[in-house]
Image (spheres, helix red, strand yellow):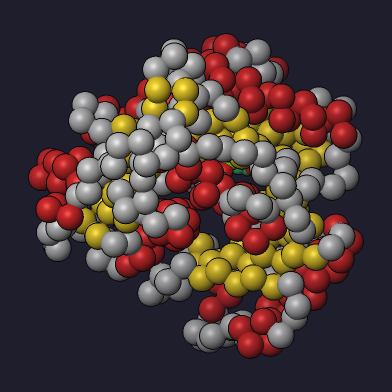
Length: 413
Ligand code: ATP
Ligand code: MG
């Protein structure tokens, strides 16, 4: 573990930047360039946040136990330690006046502890809501945003008693699920009981299986002064529970539905007094209804396109919210499609490892390749993503199809 140069900490020069007002009337001074920002988690989301922070002249310390973590290798300082290691947390707190997280399952008590001496965004309370599907759905209700019919099940008896209208359904563990993990589709009560046991008998949420016409996501950034800035509404397609394709702005969905998704995203962030970047996933049902699915208290895979297609990326917004800088409206300057690059791409049909044809791909105008520096390609592992930009949605989709054919990737655009 390298020890951070704590003595480098530069006290913010007074009045260096204009101050923003908090809704409670107190003034909040932006952190000047050169300040340290802290990041809990060293994955690709942290790496892209590090890049955005460094562009603005900030220095970033990342806490992650993996020596080769994507964000740790890009950071100015990598604290290579478990997330709950008290000494590493104390070092992070001493070095960084403001700390964020890129890792959803960071224990909320860690954030609460850091908040005793630092500015932490998003707050522990908001992260705790997003970590628990039951609490998340309760928050949607508080925000007056509809979500899937569901029940919280904590025992086999709860499974026996669950409303038959929720079957067929999807049983999801209340905590620690991601990329389709911790979920089982169940047709009837017998399958529900089996799935509940298979998932370890932990607290779960049973949702009715809904007829989806489309999936959308909205990335919203909310500053300490309550100002909000949204990315264009995105349309998403998944393969085996993992995001495969994002199109922005969303195509093939009614304008009223898009406007409602934006309105819901604002309401959800506002009702939590959220500070930072939040992504809300939505379902569009075949009858046109819009329901909130889940949310992530951080930038989201579906917002990666913003680096190449928008005036501000979701990572720029995250850094600005953390540093107390303004959050102006985001302008999308290019139509875009994003394709995820999973580890499968590094293996041929015989299972032999190979290097994808990057040169062939990069010969196409409008391709933006992002690789996360992960050492070992594994199946279903997010190794990078590809953003295609063009002047029109049609051109972006055509380019995405060409790039996908070249790499032999699925493409839904
Ligand atoms: P993420 O990687 O986004 O965190 P996750 O594993 O937390 O995903 P969900 O977003 O809840 O899981 O579900 C994954 C996918 O499964 C959804 O994007 C959607 O395609 C499908 N799905 C989930 N819930 C339902 C439902 N109630 N009805 C129909 N399809 C659903
Ligand atoms: Mg999801």
